[in-house]
Amino acid sequence: MGSWVLISAGWYKAKPPRSVSVGSAGTADDMAIAVFQSAAGVQLNIVRFNSGGEALTALLGGHVDLAAGNPLEFMGQLQSKAVRALGVFRPTRFEAMSDVPTMKEQGIDVAPFQMWRGVALPPGVTPDVVAYWQDIMKKVADSKAFKDYITANVAALHPLPAPQFVTFLGAQEALYKDMLAKLGQN
Image 1 (tube, rainbow, N blue to C red):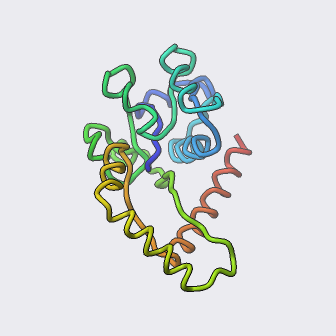
Image 2 (tube, helix red, strand yellow):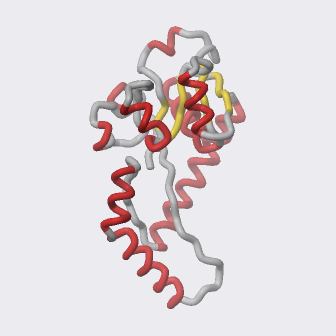
C-alpha cells in the first residue's frame, strides 16, 4: 500500500516552520511525513492521533491542515469530495486515483514510502515448511478474492519470495532508521 500526505506543492514554503499542522496516526505516518519534509525542505507540526480515523476527523473538523495515511483510510471522504488527496509517495499514480499526481510529478523528489505486509516464520523451520507456506501465500496472492481485495482497498500487490523479501526488509530497515533519525532532529 502506498502512503500519501494531503498537501499541495508550493504554498507550504511560504509558511513559517511548523506553522502547518499534519495529522498522523503513528510511526508509519510520521516516517512518511519525515520523507516528505526531507524532500521538500519544510518543517511541519506533526499532531499525533491514536488512529487514521482520529486524524481524518481532525482534518474534517479543521483542527489540522493536512493528514497522512493510506488511501483506504480516506476513500469514503475522497469519493464524497470531503477531502482531497494532493500527492502520492509512489513512483506511479494509483489507478483508482489517477487524478492525484505523485510527489515527484509535483517537483518533490521523495523516496518511495509504502506500507507493506509480510508473513514470517520462526527461525530454524525446515525448508519443507518454508516451501509449504510460500506455496500457500502464492495461492492466496494469485486468487481472485485477494486481487479483488487489493483493488478495492487501493493497494498494490507485489509478492516477494523469501530471499528477496529478506533483502527488501534490509533496505526498509535502513530507510526507517534514516527517517527515525530525521524525526529525532525535527
